[in-house]
Length: 179
Image (cartoon, rainbow, N blue to C red; front, top):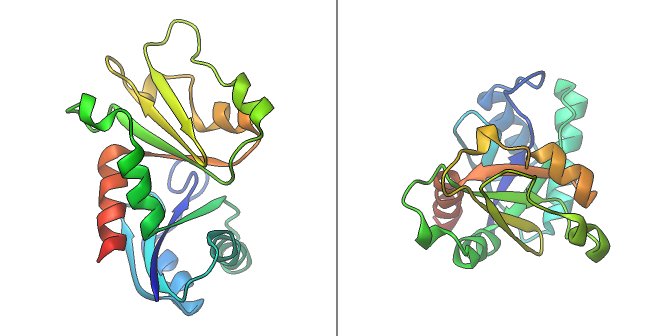
């Protein structure tokens, strides 16, 4: 058995309400065990036989759409992948404020040509590092809530689904999948 985290994009912001009890039920009904949600923003960890993350994500997304009418991107990372994301952060040791270090999880590694188009918006004090299916973000003097370097921007430029979590959430998800 393996531990995974499913990250839903845009849940409980705007027009995508989802009770965490419903999310836990949907994931449990798919046959996954030890299902726990983290915060109210569409993070769920669970145990399942070793399976490709894309297969798990598709199953959860389909069930959410079929049962609840909720159509949102779902991205899945294994415990090992989350640990690797934490280990790969070029910014975690440079910042004490976990709201200024974030990770954008991508549904797939972007094409090289699209990755070359990614750039910090003019006038913004931030930096990023694209590593496979993640974009590590650092806002040394600002906040993610004020940037133009958003999910929508990443999806438009990179051509893949994205969902962002702050460093505190990334660490919590890593820890929850490590149990």
